[in-house]
Image (cartoon, rainbow, N blue to C red; front, side, top):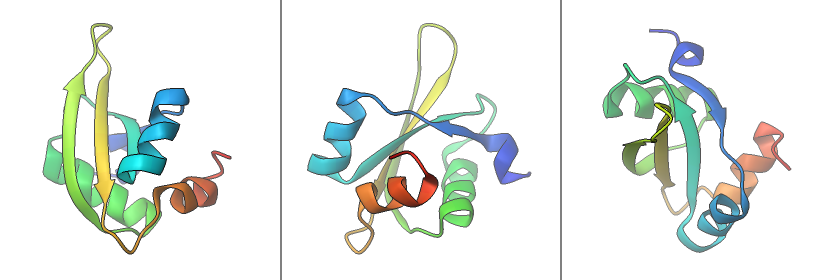
Length: 86
């Protein structure tokens, strides 16, 4: 499956920026049909990072969020800057 059909966009808010700084996590809106392994592979390929842990949540509006903790050698704020978020 094409990574662009799995990962729609990064979610940026005050809370997610705090998660970047404190927990080295990024948050993405992803396809509801994708499982954790597919999401992990897509993010690693798109952003050239290694993921330590991933968890997902389906919001009340039906969108699926992926909370991605990056490995120590990758800083979430640097990855977000490369993505063009900041």
